[in-house]
Amino acid sequence: MPFVGTLARIVAGTNYAELEEWIRSHQPDCLEPVLRPLNKENFKWVLEMLSIRAMDSLSSRKLVHDILSSSQQSSLVKREYYLTMAKGYRDLIGTGAAIGDDRPRRYSYDCYMEAVRADPKNGANPGYLMIGETLMEMSQYTQAAKFFGDAISQQPDVPQLYLLYANVCQKMGEMARGVQAMEQGLQVCGDKWSWKHRKSYLGWLNYIDRDRDEVSKRHLEYAEASADTSKEAACPVPKDKDPHRILKIAYLSTDLKEHVVGYCLEGVFRAHNRSQVHVTIYQANPKDDSRTEALKLLADSWIKVADMDDKAVADQIRADEIDILIEINGLTAGSRVDVLAHRPAPIQVAWLGYPNTTGLRCIDYRITDATCDPVESTQMYTEELVRLPTCFLGIQPRNALLNVPVSENPPFLKNGFVTFGSFNNLAKHSTATQRLWGRVLDANRSSKLLVKSQAIYEEGKKRWVDSFAEIAVDKSAPSFNFKSMANMKKRVIFLTMQQKLEDHYRCYADMDIMIDSFPYTGAITTTDALMMGVPVVTLSRPGEASIHSHNVTSSILKAVGLEDLVATNEDEFVRIAVELSQDEQRLKDLRTTLRDRCLTTICSFERLCTAMEHKFRQMWIRFLEEQGPCLPE
Image (cartoon, rainbow, N blue to C red):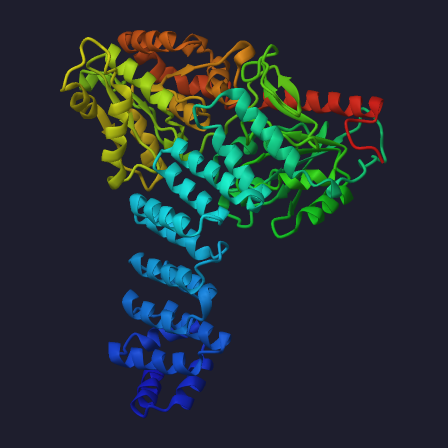
């Protein structure tokens, strides 16, 4: 290859100027085969020369980055020269990210630590975030928690550190500890906590054992305190006030991608009756993937707004003359709910992505159903509740799930014992949930518990099992003895994370009965279990004391005709779970019939969309009659 000979001649002559000119004249994708023959010393010489000459040249540093990216040299060599080139913490962040494409990840960690040391008092320094993410990717959760704990001790007035610490706690399944850290941050940092930080805190409150009304009040107080009245604008006046015309509805979401919410939205976008509604989608997630491309085909109009600020997005929605704007994310991380403060549409609705009130008075309605939010419920909302006659959500099963056949028989037939389980997010395994699971296991002494979660990692398995046994074993029971804790630990089965979704769904073949979490139940996970032939037992909160997040699985089970698996108190939960575990014929029947039952109910969107469109029409007529629930001009 002539390239190799040319480069060898230049290297041999140590001609700096000729080498730099030669490299600049070739595209980075041509460099890899040229650099591959160089031995380690010559490769290091090339980079050293460019590093020294390019210390203050961003373009030259990028050139060296391109060379490194296209080379097959070791991560250690790359790390050395990335660190040499990096100028300030921002370069170090880019350095760590670039090395992150290679292995091992500890080299990225070194770069992020250098970034933190370069600007340690800057809470916005992304080095802190990247260190946490890198440690978690390396499954070093305890070390990540210690790092952020130490950082908080040194810089107690930096809100971002509390959030990062809480995120590590979430991954370890210690939500209460994370919320405690956030509340400490709120107290110490005061006004430094932005509305963005407060939204994260409010979202976390839905996971823990906390008084319902206290959680609601926090939502209302923080939303009111964070409201920016300067954003308020006149309610748009529609040009065409025909009550029966096609309505221009729009969905605003950051989850138009490979995300569980995206699968809920897919069926809705497809099933909407175009003689009733015109569907515009505003994509707020910055990156596209194959799911994004699939969803685009289902929209009448698709506009990407990820790079636009809130006012610009609101102006776009106004210009598009949207009648009803449906916001999907609520107070979840990264949401664009603040767009609605600019009142871009006459009617503004919250739906699907957040299990509580937003506390924002610019949102007029919240779509739910009578199971999740019974009429007699006293849970506080700033939005007016619109209850659908069916479950408020539908779920489009992933192709990966449909590609996995349901196992012919429940596993108790081969195991000789019943396996209860939960594949819910580890963060949903509240203390009250684990205590109730312990009662179920105690009532069926031969049964076992199957746990699988994205955050279950080698370091954390023993930690979680020890904590579970401590919570689940009733130490006041007459049967309690020194072996009780050890025996409980032996009854917990962990499945390792699967790289392929199909393998994840195959794991349901090892579960007889899913026992749900609370106060934040499953949703997609509940439907996944049902689709794989696994019945789900859940604990609802009906009546005045109802909690929306507590009742989602109840709504799904009612939709598929399994109301008898919905308990209204803990004793009933234990009874239902144990009786079902003893009903071998029913478990066998459910294993073979649940998928078809789901496909004709919770996974069928025609009824859901008809109900939603009927409610949209009622909102529109009310708006025309009353000039709508909006700010005056």
